[in-house]
Amino acid sequence: MNIRFLCIVIAIALLCAFPVSAQQPSNANGRVVDQEGNPVQGAVVSFHPVGGKFEYKGKTNKKGKYFIDGLINSNNDKWTITFEGEGVLPVKFRIESRTVNRVLIGDVMEQSMKPGASIPEIVIKPLGSATVDLTVGSAEQVLAAAKAAAEENAIEKLVVVDDEGKRQTVQSKDPWDAALEAVAGGDLSGAVGSFDEAVEKAPDDPQRREVYAKVLYQLERHDEAETQARKAVELAPEGVDARMVLYSIAVARGDMTGAKAELDAALEVSPNDIRVLEQQAYVANQTGAIDDAIVAYEAITAAAPENSDAWVSLGGLYAGKGDSAKSAAAYQRVVELEPKDAHRVFYNLGALIMNDPERKDVDVKRAVGLFEKALEYKPDYAHAHKQLAFALLGTGDRAGAKSSLESYVQYAPDAPDAAQMQALLKGLK
Image 1 (cartoon, rainbow, N blue to C red):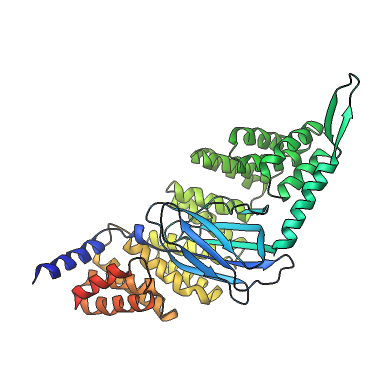
Image 2: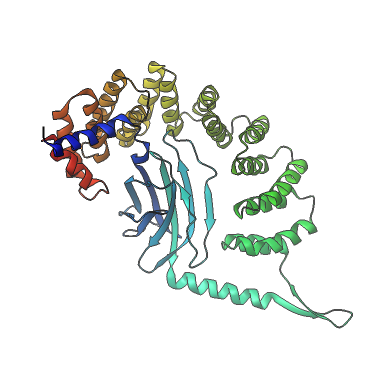
């Protein structure tokens, strides 16, 4: 055996011997529509790993939809997003990010945008998925509307002279209306002053405090947001949104015990609230309380049987507990609900097994079967071919690994690790 061949075999062995989470790809999807809801074809949504150089682009089809597979960020989980569209500008976004088990990360972000404003940075976990939906408008009309709004705002400011002869500038618009308009225009910082006036004007209005708390939270002014949210809960104990702001603040502070307490309080008010149950599952997963996560997702599927995300989560959680029958039933339910995404379900299952540093030989064989199942549903799924190759090497099947790596390179010739896989492939010949 020559030295070059030996080095390549050792490299392959090392890839198989350790968890592969750092190289596990994520995906992103979404839809771009105009302000009337019509699909926008040919727009490009790009994802850039923070601290990385590679760029992943998705182009919308005739239905306005795009999908990007194979997102890899070896530095961290943070991504920036940019948009390109001929003659159009984004005026609104909706963003959500979920883990491999379909647990929602944080809140769904939905907000209007000012011309030239950036889409917020997003966290995408390995094997997770992000959905970024955009509403766009004609660039000419968007810019004209922004200019008109600025002029209108200037006109609405009146100069008055008080009893002492001092000149003062006041707004003729109600501060609550002004605050809401600023938020709708994406100017959260500019809305703060109007919110302060609006709350002072009606201190016992829970809605004003709740909305203000949400704005302050997005501005990362957590102490102020907590003050407003707690007052909103005091004024309207039956409300859920203000409690969810308190939950989000606790998560941002890393206080999972406090976060759970806020969710428990929210569930007492609204026991079947899917949003609260999803976050309860998230906290349970983060704290290793797997039984609590299962209870939360079982409650979600009971309340919303068509919720495929919850069934995916249950499948993974049942598998982790060793309940193969329940796991298989949950994943079969996912396949029935979303046959087009079945390949990703089985791929994620296999990847989770290969990501376990304590996996046994029998586990690797199960992963092989899952990757093969993923490829039954989507034969050109490049990442499944690559992970199947690693799994097959773990079983000693070098011929099968070689064939799978050849398929990976064929289907993903421009992948960031294509050259590395080519080198490994040569060592198997």
